[in-house]
Length: 243
Ligand SMILES: C[S@@+](CC[C@H](N)C(=O)[O-])C[C@H]1O[C@@H](n2cnc3c(N)ncnc32)[C@H](O)[C@@H]1O
Image (cartoon, rainbow, N blue to C red; front, side, top):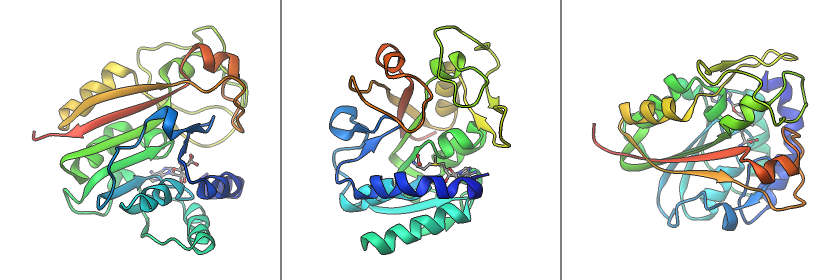
């Protein structure tokens, strides 16, 4: 599916590679307002799980980190390579699934994902894998659609979230939205906390992102009026501790 969609992600890829300041999620919320990244990234080994066009890894590299981008779409990685040439910034790109990442245990200080493994991989597979990859004290940071957005979004493609609970909270996990062949994963907060704790990840924060009034988006998952009232995106932050 992602090989088919890759072309549509080139333009946002260029925009994000071009931006000196990280811009998060569908509304492009600036890092200064969102506070997603750790303050000191210099010398840190990082892996971006589901890197797509690789712009987060580029932001990390510009802050002195040593990123590796992993993605299971050859077409997305081809765009990432093209961006590396265009912007003259290189880091390793690995073609693999984040559910079975080809790295040794305790290789990284930071694992990060924005709408990558965080929604396209089964959390019961990728969260343990991310925990395995992290050194003790290492951080896991990932951005996802909020639980509230998932519960209030109609089945119709491109239809924005409503103010009604349209599906059950209990049992939420695997989502096959009508209109394409992709599969997404979204679980509730309690399940996510228990899953992370089982794998030695201590939750440190859950940021509920709020765009500025007047912000626009290429992905109309919610109107700006909706997103100003309720969080449509969430950022989880957890730290690897001993089991
Ligand atoms: C929306 S992009 C994320 C990149 C970027 N942050 C963005 O928002 O455009 C989703 C990426 O997840 C990747 N992906 C999907 N399933 C994956 C898996 N099992 N392992 C690694 N990457 C995966 C897709 O190929 C795609 O490049």
